[in-house]
Image 1 (cartoon, rainbow, N blue to C red):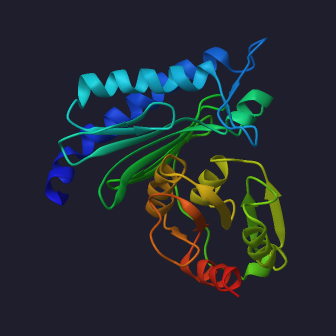
Image 2: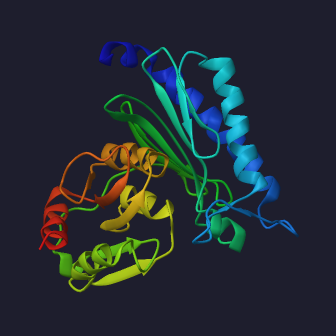
Image 3: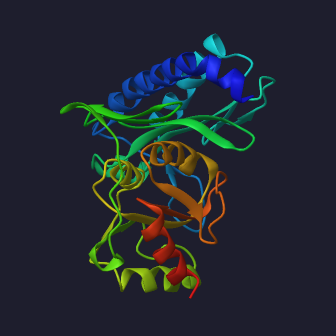
Amino acid sequence: MARIVADLAEELMNVADALADVARLATLKHFRAEGLSADNKETDRFDPVTVADRLSEQMMREILAQRRPLDGILGEEFGLKAGTSGLTWVLDPIDGTRSYLSGTPTWGVLISVGDATGPIYGIIDQPYIGERFSGGLGRAEVTGPMGRKPLKTRAARPLSEAILFTTFPEVGTPEDGAAFNRVKAQARLTRYGCDCYAYALIAAGQIDLVIEAGLLAYDVQGPIAVIEAAGGIVTDWQGNPCPNGGRVLAAANREIHAEALALLNA
């Protein structure tokens, strides 16, 4: 598989860019539109899905049907389509639909392609800002309003100097929240609510840690590929690979990852 993927690297990156391009069109068509509404996918909390979520994933799937018909697809809105090539595309058409509904530009489109072990290439795309963070297959870069730049995570620093992000203040269960608060108590600065954009900030060298719980494969596979390509590390709270989500610890380097991991498991 490694040899096959190496031969396909340019094609896979080009297809990923094509997916991100059409997702930009679909999501910007409805972003900040008057009267945008959402259906709720759950009964015990507000988990919204909009026409833009569905349109974005539908358009990406149409491209994959044309250009990579033998690959599998796992998408948040339309589930799993089995493939025969050994590669699967994992799509989150809008990561951060709550932010999308609120009009804040911190949502994003997550795209990855990988095999049974996890992602080998990923994109975090923010259509409204026009930033695209790409990583894997020898690439680690961001393109956007400030041009094209390489991605590189922050060098090691003590947790007492670190910037920590999570999306929801409660993080997960009460036990998850207590573990997160042990790390928060030692960090210099903690911020909330950036969804996938926080992972992009790790890859860009702006922040040090993202800690979350209750994630699914389409929430993490794109960020894993981008962060690891930039020099960072993403695991579960026990230090194991986490391509299927769960409790996730993303770090700029192994030193601060180890410090945060020890506190999560104290």
